[in-house]
Length: 236
Image (cartoon, rainbow, N blue to C red; front, side, top):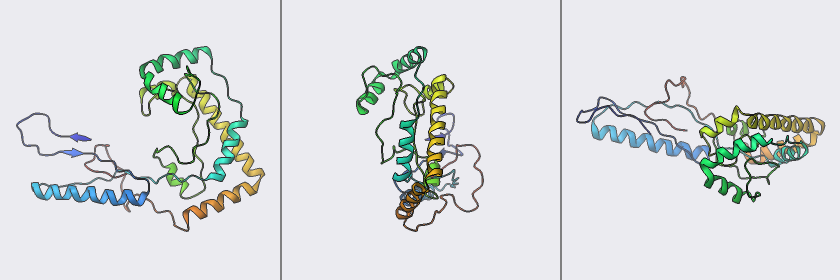
């Protein structure tokens, strides 16, 4: 994304800024791509005889699913009663879904849900390959066994990073999803505390998947807290 490129035409700019986000399935691959992006920027600076300033904004690991721990969470999800959606909540979700009806239909088709679903109810089959999202949950998962799950906190047709997510978060829809998620966490934690074998199995799987590879922060040593999120070049 070009974040700064001048304000009027026919003028030689004194500064231009671009913001890059680098992603890959593995952190090491992201580092390799980031180095290439930096080298390209350095080459462009040499060709144009301009100065280059690089600001690294942040980075995170890929998620690392722990199947044994996920089984515990999945069973907890099935054992916790979900509060039913009210008529008003269905109507609110339906109005939102009207903006992105194609997205709603696609979600219904992919997840094999009943036609006319406005907000999801129940527990979907487990996905062991992740959903492609990126967050610092991945960093935690490379330090300790970690399970990741989501609950219905918005209308089914809401695209990610969309205003509809915000609208539902402050609505009773989002609050119900949050409360249900909190109960699932509590139930899963209690099951692990009661049955120590569950924790040992999760630990063994974690050690097998990490294969003795220690966690290495993706942030370079000495990195200062970034300023505005309009830095020239950054890697994730």
